[in-house]
Length: 382
Image 1 (cartoon, one colour):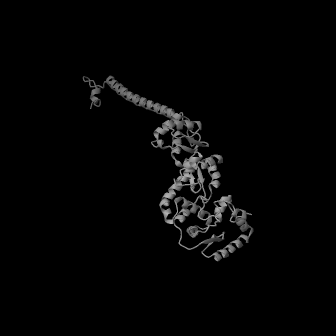
Image 2 (image 1 turned 180 degrees about the vertical axis):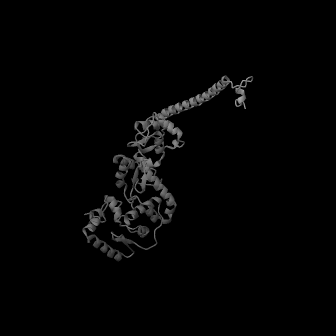
Image 3 (image 1 turned 45 degrees about the vertical axis):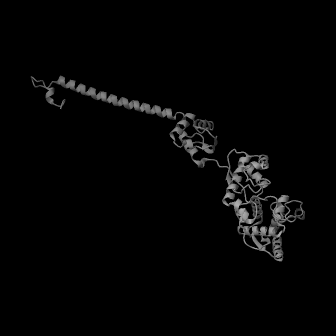
């Protein structure tokens, strides 16, 4: 092998070692080794310098760590990565739009960031900010709970508070009820169609948009019940079904009594007897939270006076639940003409076709009202 034969290091005439040749060979080998070392070392030097430069470039305008203080940030609709970056820089969340743009480009899901209000932290690494914006658990939710059986008037303050609106704004939207997405057969306003449920409402939405969330849900529920077609089975229009359901909602204490109350309503209508249900009159006089009305209330001159007028009132008296709508469409079988809740604390209710039995039940109810101060307050409000 070349360079490995000791004979090459000896003088061919004398046979003695040629130290000059050895030195030359050694210097040549050293030069090769040195060149290799310089080449490798230089490459490593350049690599480490380049890596350090890249790290400095990529992190100079970014934060380290896990964030500092909680902050709520609103991402506007239609915002691209650059716009989102600007919003986050202004809120102190990320250090620069450049860092956020790089982090967004590196995350294939970044285009799925939604508009909305987010719980974030200040001084976040841009990549962390992107990840937090993609986590729906960081979205600030605006909730609105509309309770069963409440009137529109009772729900106006609830809507205003949930949506950060003034009550006047909500009242104006309610007044313009034909633009609230109600069924084409709706009459006389929003009452009956502000479906009771807990809703997530749009952030920054106006009163009309917020109310439409509830009216849209009414439409969904009505569709699920096939309300328009089924109303013919009880010989009512769809609007009359909503009216009946609104009365059922106000009259029952127990869920299982809803279909029975529906039957009482329809039996009295068929017989031509006024409904004589105080919940309807209470709506006319604007009273809530009491079971008994005054003589003046009972004699009010109103189409909602169910002691004077036969049939259903002109419109709903509350916003009924799905259970009450279903009961109005599917009444129980029975000949009952009367019912009375004899014990409001338990919801025990008497259904009968006999007037004298009804009067006996009424006495039981009045005895309950007088049994304690607390009971008296439930019945009379004082």
